[in-house]
Image (cartoon, rainbow, N blue to C red; front, side, top):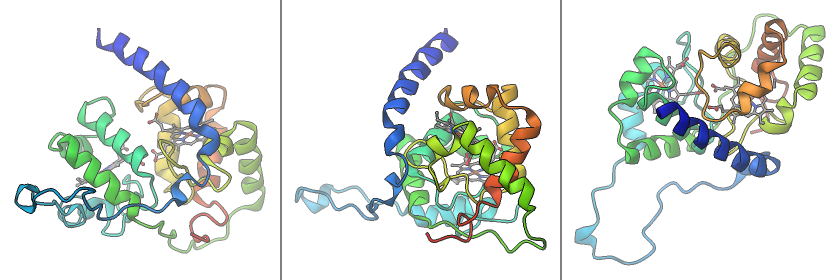
Length: 229
Ligand code: HEC
Ligand code: HEC
């Protein structure tokens, strides 16, 4: 059955993830290849026409996600600053109909494996975009509570001390609050499909109220949205 294969795959992924976790922080600081040149000098005539995923992103994705990876469209996550490996796993989940969202699934169904890689790699080159300035400063007590929850529940351990993710772990610093809230609640209730069990177990012991505080904190992460990178 599909579910069994999926579960077996997930177990393998979790072990791989556990092994990779300590390197996550800063992993995305590595320079990314923009236009990887072929290593060998194969005859130019045989080289397939290169697809410009920057152009395709502008044409197919920017209407919802914004040309720079951050739009104001409600419910649409910020892609800017998201590691390529994370994006490709999510595109895969959408394409396979595991993670479901009508508009996004419709887009993903049209993508080949090469397209998923091309778009994910392009997303990986988009620098983080600061959140628009908020009308009111963050509530200090709520931020402090968010910080201690993020330590207690190891969010910082996997997502990195700057919550900027790396490899298959997403950046959550500066992500839209309502989207974070919905994602966290979804992992807990099972409505958001996960690629591995990492998030499902991370939130299983956290109350919905605390998840909302974590969403509040990550969205306003100090140094995240407007931060150094
Ligand atoms: C019609 C609007 C729309 C278009 C067009 C669109 N997306 Fe999305 N995308 C969404 C929405 C909405 C979500 C969040 C879905 C959810 O909440 O599960 C999303 C989620 C994603 C995610 C997961 C982000 C995360 O943080 O988990 C990725 C990656 C993504 N889109 C990439 C793309 C790419 C690449 C394209 C173009 C090929 C594209 N999207 C086109 C609306 C769109
Ligand atoms: C064991 C490592 C691990 C821990 C601990 C962890 N995460 Fe995650 N997180 C992940 C991975 C991996 C993903 C990608 C989810 C997937 O598709 O399976 C993720 C995804 C997310 C997402 C979805 C982001 C998006 O763009 O859609 C949010 C929000 C999130 N984590 C917040 C948290 C919070 C808050 C905590 C602490 C309660 C936490 N995480 C703890 C590894 C972890």
